[in-house]
Image 1 (cartoon, rainbow, N blue to C red):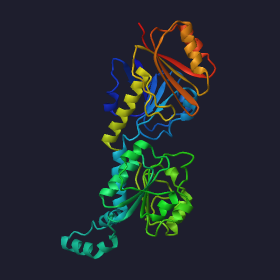
Image 2 (image 1 turned 120 degrees about the vertical axis):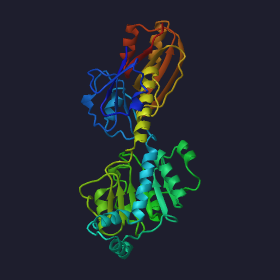
Image 3 (image 1 turned 120 degrees about the horizontal axis):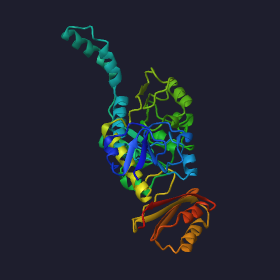
Image 4 (image 1 turned 45 degrees about the vertical axis):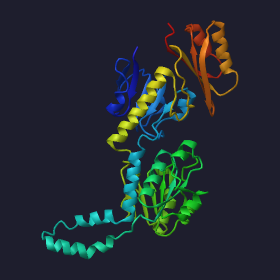
Length: 394
């Protein structure tokens, strides 16, 4: 029977094409879908039917998905980290250039000259007024990059090619991210040390309890005079009251962000974009392809890659029949599952089990298909969240 994929946003066809139509039905309305594929749709807990086994977002942030309740129900939530990284990097490059030169102001000024019909008079006016739009070059300036993941590392590399000095800070830097990072990126020991040394600071962090309002009055006060803050991560990372105080007090020369708010619109010291960081055809294609591939691998094989709430676990298929078991991360549950298989004389061919915080996940390849009664006994084990039988042992 074909798997049903509910789409709650318009998803790139290049992504949907990764789900073969002979095995998947895709529609924007299903009463009992097997999985949900979305972008920015604000999904409520009560909108997730009991039939849903997984949710995938074609994008990086998952603050539009009730992740905690999904975890409690044994539903892995996938995202697409890095798929839109180049698009965001290029917009950050745009932001750096707009923040260093009077480009926006100059464009706005030129629009006021539409009534000048004589070319010579126009040139004379431009020559007389262009000095007010003079800026400074990025070469030799220092950029601080806060968060050195898929996007932050690309931003750091881009800034180096522009001739900037780059300082990075990321207390949760992974080994993989560290390998991607140029040796020319200097490491700051603390956020305050980074903010105090940089002409420009670019933020690339997710919204967590630890990062909400992270850029506060204390950090903004230590920035050098004439400095510029760029936020292409999330609005909530910057304390809005502290930001306004820094702008009004002249502590911050310019704030450039992808997240307009009513208090910031119209300020001459703020450049705002309409949340277009990932708005390129290429980024939408890349995100959709990654999300669809991860969803398919989970539904067909139980494998988990790039989940925000489940451990990464990939097991090559040895047999056609596989069990996936999600359970609370407590002792003896896996042993009880294996005991039920032993009671039915079912041989375990291969298995893998990993945990993440309070959740554990298991893939078990078996040689004989368990009876419906055995599956129900597994589901009845205290601490087991769900059990899926994948494939056919016949």
